[in-house]
Length: 237
Image (cartoon, rainbow, N blue to C red; front, side, top):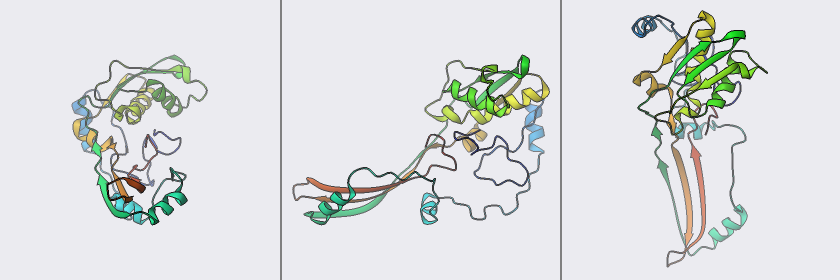
């Protein structure tokens, strides 16, 4: 259900590893929203080894070298920069943090899935990327090579700015799987609390810098190392 294939399951299965708060475990289907909320509250989940080895901060991740493979990037000629730094008139070093922003759109993640003939599905989704959502839903429903059987429609999406590029897929996927199972239209919508837990937001960064400069303030060389808290999947990091 995530951006990269096979990286984020639609639902966690028994015995699988919880990678992040807000991952979907199960979906309760009912005739009314109140019935579904009441039934979902009765589900009891037992987690063994909760929080063992959990990485909770960006500094934890750096210390444990927890990062995505093949994500290191270097801009500029390091050898030349380090030489200029060594010969610099003045030098200053330090570190700082860029605080991220948690997503909180006024229009929450929502989707309505309607079963169609030949195993197809029409899904109304609050999404910024309907074709991306369609492709992911085709995979979730096992319609590989038959993506035209899935149609994703959307009206004007409120509260986008990235949250509805990919984080709508778990909601749309849950609605589509349930609709396929019960052969009826199914609507799934997050409330504000669930939205806050599940959607994430813009990443926070840690930056270390070293700057060589002349007496008049002209910068002679600058080396910056930056680490971003990209979460547990590639997504749009």
